[in-house]
Length: 225
Image (cartoon, rainbow, N blue to C red; front, side, top):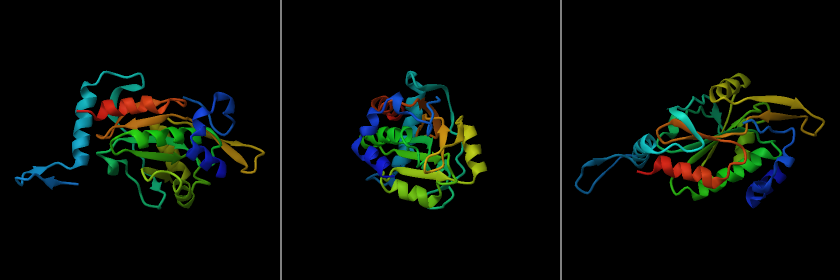
């Protein structure tokens, strides 16, 4: 945990190379009114509308999915043990990542990139970390982990079958690998980040190593009017 915190806070994780990738991870790829009293949409609704409009007219980027589709469900529980529904974040772009808190290298590096995106986005944005290690990543463990990250994060866990269902829906694969380390095992997993626009549509995905500017450029494309 200490090593992870240092990587997250210092940004040193961004300099990790493929040589550092070990068995622990894999590289697979609110309403108001105007002065005249006329009703107006909430900021979240306006952003969702703008996102849908912009997405329809924006030229395709190198990380775009060929077709925008509704993001798969995430019927899991958050770090506070509450049932989670991705639709609850409608109106806000969301970055989704599947990983785990004991990940030694790839996950901290990816979280470092996500932190940059959150800090530089210029619009409200959320980030979701879905664990692929529910045995160790209980709500309490996720809550402890997220205490060191920006409040934009949500951590999700659940029963092993629920995690598998969610991962399959997102095209994520993972597997437990027994090791001789103190933790006893590691998780190999897909290391992509997924961008869901404010309208709840899956728009783009980023392989491990994609840097913050590329994600920020897509975010601006999908949220500009």
